[in-house]
Image (cartoon, rainbow, N blue to C red; front, side, top):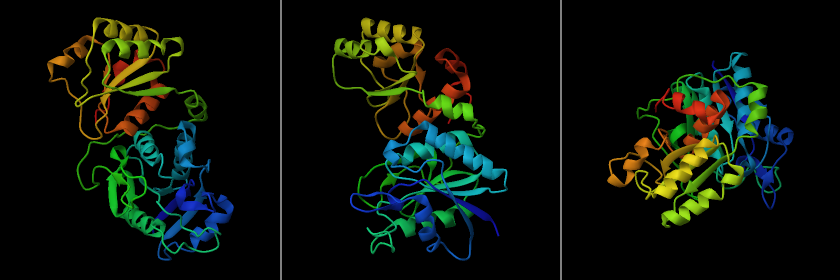
Length: 323
């Protein structure tokens, strides 16, 4: 019988009380074990950080990956991750970018807690048990890779996006049965990576229908303390109306060591430069997103930051594993 490692990381799934807050892991796991299928070999583990997922950051996910990679050395190859829904798409993308095709990993969460307010019994209405059982079945049937299981949908983890705040069908993404070129090579996470990731600073700017002059002013406000990467979310296929001043500002930002990545604010689909308004991009030095969504782009930038350091090295490796 295949061993499954179930790692609990908090989220609505394990919340109790009013207002909802994560139940302490040592109290929650015995309750969780009562609802696990008896015909599966499931070992439960506590993630390095238990918190509301809206508070999760890169070090939390990298510590989780390090835990998974440690469990792989103990001959676990099938993993269920219980995670909160607020940043579940980001957790999914980071695991996909860093784990590659090295294990069978399914993330899951819920819109309603497993337990009642008191935490002494299962909730009368919950999607937690259903989502968990679906994830457990999926992790044994799916091929190697990272997936999200939610409301009877199994999706490629790099593509998922939370599309509803309260409905049971809270996520959308590419169906796991459809072909996708995944990240192949895993990244072995070290303690130094976790520590360094705490300094990773990424700003995503959703382009607004403003004049190039105002856009330029907004960008120049960042010059005093630039992040590691600025993600520009253009319109449509990545279109941005430009001016000479704006081009010069973007170049100045790049000269200060900040990477600039162009993507689209549209949820699904790739960017391209088939419109004349985007002709300037060819000689701009901007990195063009080849990712499968906003969370996937964040995850790739984090990985580039850890692998290659300064933005000057990013361009050389940006298309090493084109999705």
